[in-house]
Length: 312
Ligand code: C5P
Image 1 (cartoon, rainbow, N blue to C red):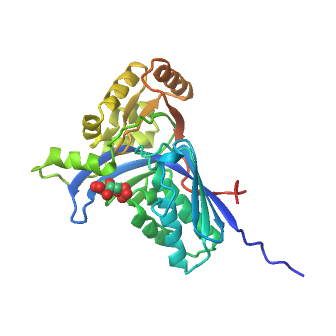
Image 2: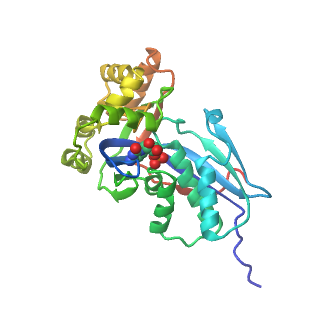
Image 3: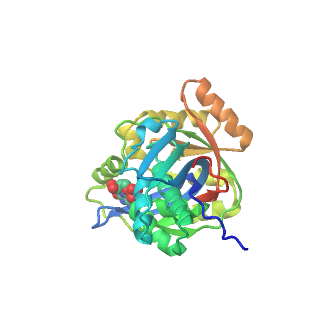
């Protein structure tokens, strides 16, 4: 007698954080979002989301800063799971477990990573037949960064950040992230400050810079460091000046370059190699400039299923 393949009752997916190597912000669109041209790079800090069939819907969050993540229906992973359930017509409730490594509310897309992980986990659990394009469309309804976290690697983000085009990039980059706690530095508040600063100006439609493209094609960290750019950086620093001090100190400590990640407050610093990254991390903490630093390399793959679930 042949046995049917066992249907999983739990699936775990890991999703990486992102850094925006370049973030050009264009005009405010009628839908309230800004036109963007960004270069995303997925970096090796991960959240894991496990979805398991249960008697009722529920969610628990573990890891550093877990208490700052809503463990209710507003959680992006929960919204992603509900979205896939509705799209597939599934009525079985799920219990979600999130293990967080990505800094919370830091500009590294932790919530979007959880949403991407939950989408892929539910799709895998229920044997969904969505195409990559259909998953991207669902992902984009959850947040501008979510489609990229499904893809990973290095990619251009256009539209409001949700339209992904892979970029040919060589090499591995060594990052040190400083997730300073920037109270009051929400994504809408940083975009709001940008709008006030740019009021009355006729912003062009943003496009990727040729210098960034050639640095990535060459796989040259020095060239990349020289062209890191973020239109929101000035606003994030104005709202939370310690970010500017971290950037200054890091250059003194030998960083090749640095910038605010997304809308901040995390500062992303590029080092000249694995040892340079360790030295930079030690200098930042030993000097008291930073009390929490994370090292990671990029690019890495996007959301992917972990073969054996840790929890069920
Ligand atoms: O889509 P996401 O969840 O990343 O957006 C969070 C907030 O960031 C939006 O509500 C908006 O205030 C701002 N945003 C924007 N333009 C974008 C992306 C985000 O104004 N392209």
